[in-house]
Length: 150
Image 1 (tube, one colour):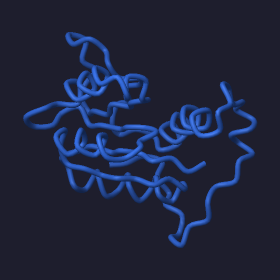
Image 2 (cartoon, rainbow, N blue to C red):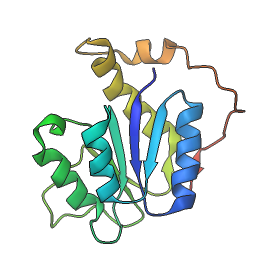
Image 3 (cartoon, one colour):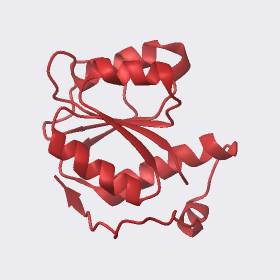
């Protein structure tokens, strides 16, 4: 199921690696390096799912999540925050899921599918069995074996 995914990370290697893996999984990915670009993109394009790094300069991932949640149009946008550091407990939790790096790609892919399928199909609940049976989009790129990245 193709989703428009916004991926925010100041590390170019992480941006590139996850973008390739998600595109091979059939999604459209727009990768940006900071919160300002992410907010600009959210104003201009439909986004079904957002992934952000936690530790970024100027505006960190937790602050970005709070900004997105405060924006009515994206208040319910599914957001995964990734970090090598532990989940921040001092800030109000504005993200949907927190994954520690190195995160398994299968876990991230399952979270995307579980949240995006209902948004794109209009079905309130999609069974795990239906997600397993869904055909992945064909890709011109060879499959990426990404049990862990970066």
